[in-house]
Amino acid sequence: MEKKITVLPGDGIGPEVVTAAVEVLGAIAQKYDHQFHFAYGAIGGVAIDQYQDPLPQNTISLCEESDAILLGAVGGPKWDHNPADLRPEKGLLRIRKHFDLFSNLRPVQAIPSMLKSSPLKEDIVKDVDLLIVRELTGGLYFGERHRTENEALDSLTYTREEIERIVDNAFTLARLRRKKLTSVDKANVLDTSRLWRDIVDEKKAQYPDVEVEHSLVDSTAMKLITAPAEYDVIVTENMFGDILSDEASVITGSLGVLPSASMRADNFGLYEPVHGSAPEIAGKGIANPAATILSAAMMLQYSFGLLEEAKAIEDAVAAVYEKGFFTGDMAPKGVEALSTNDWTEKVLHEIEPAYVKE
Ligand code: NAD
Ligand code: IPM
Ligand code: MN
Image (cartoon, rainbow, N blue to C red):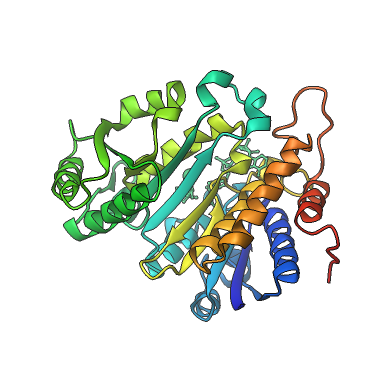
């Protein structure tokens, strides 16, 4: 198979973790005889520095010509006081909107060899296998906003169409899993949530084999860490999904392992870790590349339909953990942490012992 992948390393640890994921894709290409062509573009703070724009037109054009996008992370203290449109995060929001990447899939699975690293009890986390389906192109992130010296406004709007497509998507994904859907909202307070809840109820009839529950976001935040194994698919609006997915990283022991896929209806997608640019560890070569490597696996699965190849990456990551190799964010007490590069080498070796870097 021949595919064009646009790589947007971004800021902070972004370039470090993306380099690791590109190498892993290279090993997969070599082993399974695919051609992946990588084209690099700027987004976020580095794009502001170079083009005075967090998402320059040449980056958009590169992405339009490609089959999928791999992104590291954006943001950092250098740009934290920039005006709203010149912030690195704005580049991320714009690329999501431009490509209509409305469905953000954030899977969370307990890693057997990591159960002891989770701050939660082993019994609570051991059977966790859930998928957060986060609406990504609506809600508070894209509402009308304004700011004066003494007043600020962010508005939360959802249309029926926006809710219907993400809810349909979540029902469809639940069908392929354990057939349980939890819709998370704040329907006791918000009108957008009440519309959301009505639409989920209307849709139920089309998916009679899926068990549906509604859950308020505040108590869901509590249950997600007291009884996470009860969840299968969670569908929720943009902001709630952002917060709950970082919370869910406690289950795996680190934010550094959570991947994500941001999908358009036709399976074009942007793949990026759930975590950010981690400025305090950037440049040290110690970031955990697992989330980005696993995001690359999601690309193979969701955009390219390469299921065996995707599984080869997931199995390799699992095997490396099983053998007791960790980066610093996950290494149990007394176990020496590997650098980003050394840990990635272990993954490459699992995928293809004969892999030769080009
Ligand atoms: P963060 O996710 O960057 O970091 C949170 C914590 O997790 C830090 O302690 C960090 O060191 C650690 N961490 C994160 N990823 C790690 C990894 N791969 N390996 C080891 N440790 C890791 O969140 P933050 O500190 O709140 O935000 C920093 C910047 O990142 C901000 O500018 C924010 O806007 C941006 N951000 C970007 C994205 C994105 O690009 N998708 C996502 C979240 C935050
Ligand atoms: C994420 C990030 C982004 C978000 C920020 C950087 C805009 O936190 O991808 O989870 O809030 O969506
Ligand atoms: Mn986030």
